[in-house]
Image 1 (cartoon, rainbow, N blue to C red):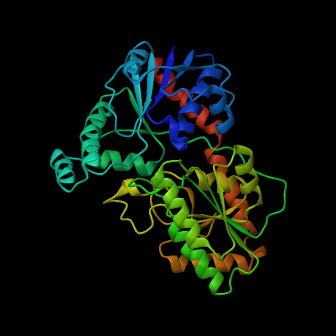
Image 2 (cartoon, rainbow, N blue to C red):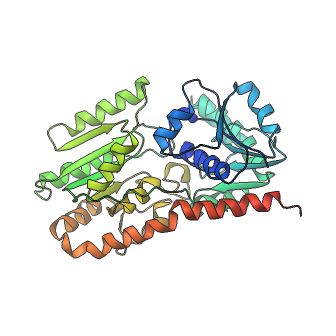
Image 3 (cartoon, helix red, strand yellow):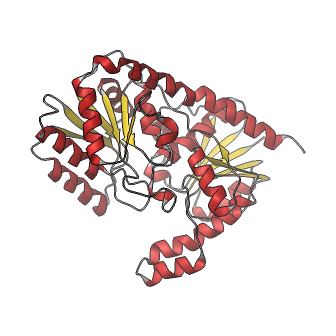
Length: 376
């Protein structure tokens, strides 16, 4: 059974790209002929292997122009498409759509209103998103990262999706924990999944000014594009952090990121802060891969009480949830003041990670593919 995996935004090297590579890697290792379809010359097999720490030994990385993508997908028994707004129809003999974003209700009048407000790019994308969702509704299967996304798509678009949690790598380390708080994620500002580093820098400054973080550091690790907007935002964050023990680790390698997880004591995440996740679900964290990665390394997560984070963290059991900056500061100060008293929380965070490891992902993925390949 031949399989083609296409991602419409390989160049961002984020969670969706890792998810697509994991699907290809696991199915290729199982003996299926698998192609990863890429459009850009700089997206090479070597680069994907290194950045995502995947073998991809039985996977062919095939370069094709965007105009050739549909033809390549049509040649596959299963076409797996990861797209946030571009529709591709139902090209494969069986077609799987991976929908990362918990889309709110989308109507053509809404798209036109956005265009009239000067949001012409997003308005045009809404028109395409509407077509994408129509395609997904008729697909052989729709995969989503979390129950949060599944429930949102069912409620707003009558799409019945299957939850396939992302495969999370194990970053357990053998080094002592340091007095450090870590945050991980893309450094950018946008309508979708903004990590809200500005909020967390504000919280850490408040923690320091109140005398509750003596000897502690805050580490921000994330990829950042070379475009002007991303670089300007990075500079703004660095300016806000000046004078405080805040470190920026930009475009860290896989090994560097693993070392940060192993050494950090606490983990912060704020994507979706201040957002009503029923009205604007797209602005929250759709799952929280970096949160689970941190938990694999026995970091205690202190994350916003919103979106997919609530699916991962049980407050007071394997981490802590917060709604306000004051709560984030107070919960962190509590952990700093009594580190030994929260060792059971740390151990349970590590145990929770195992529900999302690669083995669980592979078992679930094989079952989905087997069902698609079995005649009714």
